[in-house]
Amino acid sequence: MNLKIKTLFPMSMAAMILIAGSVQAETPEEKGYAIFNEAEVRGDGYVDSQSDMVMILKNKQEATSEREMSVKGMEGSGDEGDKTLMVFLTPRDQKGTALLTHQHDGRDDDQWLYLPALKRVKKIASSKKSGPFMGSEFSFEDIGGQSLEDYTYKYLKDEKYDGQDCFVVESYPKDKNSGYTRVVTWVDKGHYRTLKAEFYDRKNSHLKTMTSSGFKLYLDKFWRPDELLMVNHQTGRSTVLQQKNTKFDTGLSDSDFNKNSLKRAR
Image (tube, helix red, strand yellow):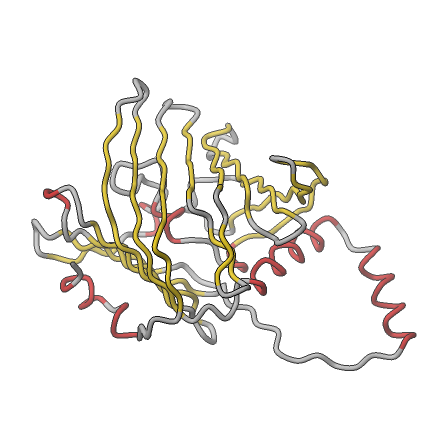
């Protein structure tokens, strides 16, 4: 997601009135896009980040297992979107497993998975991105993130969620290989953060719900949740992603996000 607005032009009062009128008259599709565009713009400028993460998997019987990871991210430029690298530190049999994602505007994202037991890098085919990531309730598609132009949007309504005033927006993936027909998202009006998202499968049945909590403000600008919870309503399983020790502008470069970086990741 890399739409950047850099310039402000002075406007006459007449022009401002005309613009205000057009905003009032915008369609639900235009308003939905504008909400997600605003969320995109507010997230611009983070440069890069690093954090520690714990993945907690819970089955239908509520038995749990944990995996520790390190996560790096770097902001994209031009037509290239953000880049992320997730590396498993535990358990021992998964240590060194790593997922590299390159987002792109207007075309499919690239994802590569390094499997240390096989000592090889495997590219994730577009048709496989709806599959589960490392046995979790998050798919490769979820982990890859959302670029603004990957979806079309429709504003549905205003609604409170968890005591906060929210926009409710429906998003429709353009990718025919997506595991979803639509995603309904609650975006808080104050800071444009995703608080809740409902995912509907290819049969348009409610598949999963993701909720975000424990938001913290970094550098007086960037909001990040401490925890993401994904619940699969069809299987009864769930996955929690807990994030901590987040740091920004740590000096990462493109060389930290190429296929060779997968093999040396620890």
